[in-house]
Length: 364
Image 1 (tube, rainbow, N blue to C red):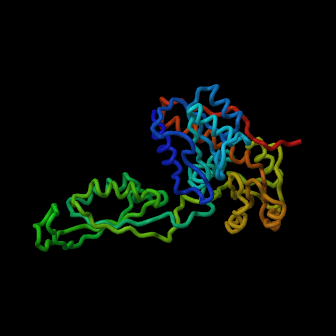
Image 2: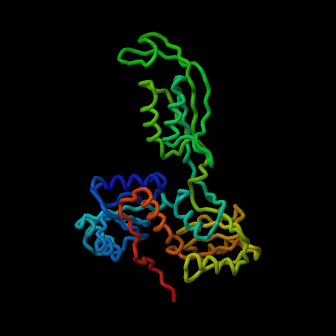
């Protein structure tokens, strides 16, 4: 398989445009035209993980956390990152990172953690702004159905639990074809009136290039008329954190023991909530303290995340339990998510879950 095919598939799951501006997701090392035969999936690219990749004859490493996060100004082998980059270049092993873009999609880091905790009725906790656009395109009536279907296939018209959504309005299109044109209908240098349909469809902003490509390839006019609008609406499937419900409410002690068991964490740092039964759960894999206020606003009974500072725990104000289960522990299920996704997409391509525990935090 070509590395570019793997990259494109991962970017279908988690588009690079959805990563935060401080992040460095995507192909970090490697030639997109390189032929690959095996991938190793990990949370961190450590020197131990890189040795594992060589032992397993993997020619690409897929990592959640980017190996190269800050700028590299020299390669002297003075730290692990420099040594791994040097080895990767020498051994021709590609490295691909899928970080905050995977945090910000519905079927990503938070969904797999929520699944591990057996939550249902899942929703994004903090939808990401400026992620939706609207397309308005004008097409002859006889070609409207085909164009609509092609735009649906390209990703237009998805709203919540519905797809193939559009609004269509018939009208009259006026235009004059000038010299150098090849009009599909009408005559050059003459005003032409055509019965057309205006089709309006919503789409995820990251799909814009694919949408325009599908439009141009399937519209009968050589110069299709269309408009694209940025929307204030928020997408229900793109954003930070997640919220869901336990099937049955639990008291705080039972809930914390349940979380500890399901995540196999050795330590939970927490602040108590109101003392009521816990059923509505907000969560964020990785560092999620920035979502505490959003979890409270959503009336969550508990918020599960990692890297909570001492003073952040006070924000629960004894109204919402805040539980810090550890950064690694909150993201550990991401590896299997990626393995399962790639096995489904490429059943004849070898994808292996790293057997190395890269959690740098130890508990005494």
